[in-house]
Length: 191
Image (cartoon, rainbow, N blue to C red; front, top):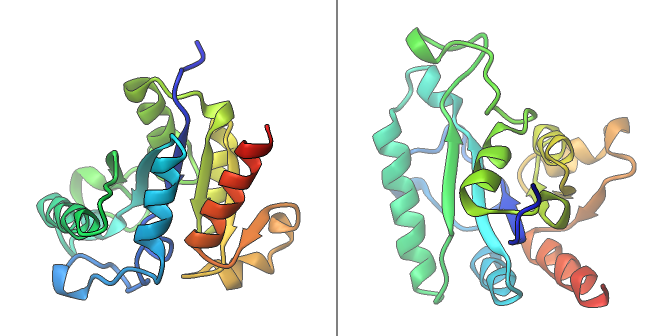
């Protein structure tokens, strides 16, 4: 069944905020320039904005789910200063090889698998064919494609390095989240 809402799925680290290995401390969080305004513009265009983030630092024992949730609350508070917000946060705590305990397994939620996007589509009545995935890694692009979304690669975070990969040749590339939001808005305005 096709949903009724359109969404833009966003990777977190390297797309919304400056990439810092295994970010989990609030004091280390820093928006990429223009990211809050980009989120606001996507919401103004009628999209749900949903974060889908691999957080293998949980599986590796570097931090726990409470710390991730606290960071997400901090992001919401910072976005409120811009009059906007994220509609939902999803994160994968698993890793197939480098995990400890119950989080060490190959799951369907870790991007490039589409599990988080499919779960959000069910929970928020999203039409994946009218939605977008924006991220800075090949796994983000793969997850979007496998869910049936159009995927865009931003050149922030790891994006510059990933853009050179042969598998990314036909993927839309944008300088940052602001450029991606403008590209999406221009596309939906035409249709």
